[in-house]
Amino acid sequence: MARDIIVLGAGMVGVSVAYHLVLRGHRVCLVDRREPGRETSFGNAGIIQREAVEPYAFPQDYKTLLRILANRSIDVRYRPPGVAASAGPLLSYWWHSFPTRYERIVPEYASLIALSTQAHTPMIEAAGAEDLVRKQGWLELYRTSGALARRAERARAVHARYGAEFEVLDREAVLALEPHLAPVVAGAIHWQNSWTVASPGDLVKAYADLFTAEGGTLHQGAISGLETGKSGWSVTTDTGALEGSDVVVALGPWTGDWIRPLGYRLPLFAKRGYHMHYARDDQRPLNHWLMDAEVGYLIEPMHPGIRLTTGAELERRDSRAQAGQLDDAEEIARALFPPLGDRLEAAPWRGARPCMPDMKPVIGAAPRHEGLWFAFGHGHQGFTLGPATGWLLGQLIDGETPVVDPAPFSPARFR
Image 1 (spheres, rainbow, N blue to C red):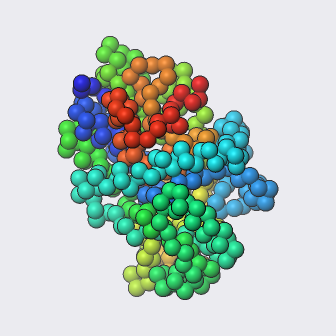
Image 2 (cartoon, rainbow, N blue to C red):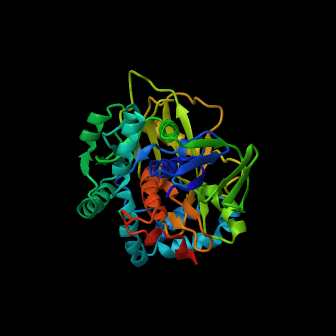
Image 3 (tube, rainbow, N blue to C red):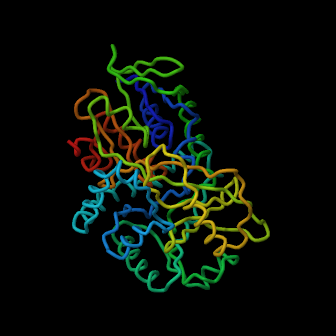
């Protein structure tokens, strides 16, 4: 039976959920204050990471912890007020990252990651977005042979258990693919069945256009109210009010603002990130998406220019931007890839990744309200997992047998 469903949030997750629901015959309205794909989904590294079956854990070894504590690393920076504001979730994140607990989390998380490219495929094709997607994988670079060997050993285990395809490249093989890199790398892991996207925001927009072509409705307006209504749920925005039998909250790092008044105090916290675009040199191109793995940033040849994306910054979601992490990454990136040109924007883009302490997204029915559904907390992988989340949530809403066990992602796990 068709329902009137309101989906809050038009990032990759919300757009994908809305698309799957409208395909199932529901009447769906997608709500966001901005156009689809202009917030967190806009600024990521643009990789559909089929290999990312192991979520980012809180470091457990003292050497890494001491390095991070010094607060000069490229991969992780922190601000004391941000750490204090998220102290509870961060402590829980550290606890869940202990090896015995982490090893139980990985197969649960991997069950959803394994669907990523499979779930994106029909949406890419239906949206006519093949020109945005490259299926040549990406390179995880290492500067020391020891680090490369350790990563290769783990990659072999990931391949055997979860089907992530890879090849270990030595320095000569890396420079054959990327001849304009400085010869400072020992080698790389070439992840082969992950895909890259030349403009992440444009892929989300293509999916949103597909949603409207299938009969869905876009409503652009800032949300000012979410409450139970006459027909189920009422959503108020600055451009009008909406009523529906069901509402899906897919608001990424803003989710807590709207579910907390309903009594849900889930331990969501933000890892902020930055990007900047740089002019490309067509005579000395960058051919692949590259992660400088022992440093902690990525560079990617995207449509607007070469994008540099930073690691994580532990800070309050809405506090002012801090330039140091990106500036330091840029200096190292220029040494690695000398053709990196001038900055193309006046200021870096800043976004916030919505993270949960057990590293798994929240997908499913709210425990205490009929018709309220959650789809958030995807951490670093919302862009990768949006279509798989829409697939799973659509099955749950319609009472079908789900494609994967939904229990690890249930909101009820935080009761």
